[in-house]
Length: 156
Image (cartoon, rainbow, N blue to C red):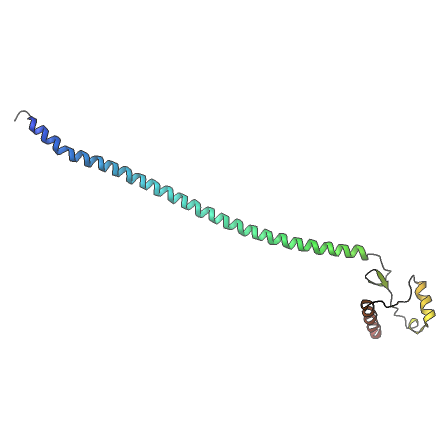
């Protein structure tokens, strides 16, 4: 046959329509699959970034905790040093060598056997010559200081 009939073209057009529709569907489906793959890749990248950021936050939390502990330790050490400094400043050179300090007073306990045999008047004169006076016990702390030193002197 030499020519195409109008009915043949019409049938071809009718046969082509479902194929064209299927081709459009497949093209759209391919675009959807590509978009889905791109979205999945972007999601995977975001998840990896999230995991990395979460790890960094955890590490910075550990560093922060360690720094806070160091700060607390240093503050306690500073307080202790300030306290020691205050005590040293208050007590430095306040009492002559061989004397003991209790609060704001200096006390001397003679280790000389001859001094322990003096009467009250001679003992008082000896104390005054050293810049002091005989002790009048006014509180329990002074009593304990005297007791502790008598025990120590008894052992000498």
